Length: 332
Image (cartoon, rainbow, N blue to C red):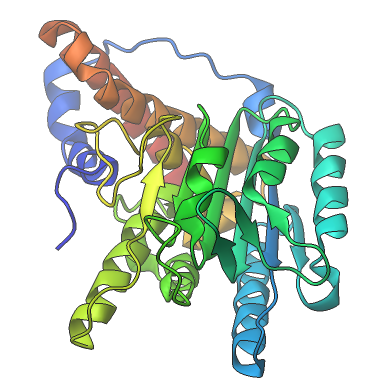
């Protein structure tokens, strides 16, 4: 069973209270900043599949990268997607791609980098195994630091990926690793379930027809744990998430441990009606507003301990009413 205190579960429970709150509170709404810039914010996707070393792994890594590419393009036809595999998945090519995004991206945009393959960690340096020279976590972090996007997500699904966390973690950057440390060196199964999360609607736990980075992580982490349990094997990988900018990551992000807020605010893809809505200007504006409101709710939840109870209740009610109003417009 999923952890009941995740950022997704509280949003889901809020949604069920819309009608009741609306009847009690009436027309007390707050004014939220919603600009044209939010509508036109872009998400840049980069997926890279490194060396397999063996035909089986080569095929698996390439297939997973291609599947992610396919799912992203089906969800958002006008998305900025670049996928590297085989001979194209070199350090030089990745540097070129990220440098290009750095020149094009704006502060309100988001970047999602997904890494599949084998990694290595010698106790000091983590590296992704690529054709030709490998690239280290320190080098990756330097490239990402030059990209001005306000939100970034790095999903490192390689072996020993936990060894990359310290170099990559930074405020407003969610870092997901397939392993908790650089010493977990077996080929992970996490990538399989990450891809599955992007095509399985059950990963959408708050039922807003979008898969966030947090939802995808929770789905893939749970599936990974269940895999080892069903196989009656000792787990050789423990996926973690950190987006507070510091720490060792956690398997169960929540407001209580301060992890998961940034990840909850990064939408990876849309599903169903939301996917169709993203392709029409009017609905796209409403969809962007809904996502903004949901992000405000998530942010408020993480700030609850520092806000007077009555103020928290008032702000939450106002946000929920505005969200219900926006959803009603989307449903027309």
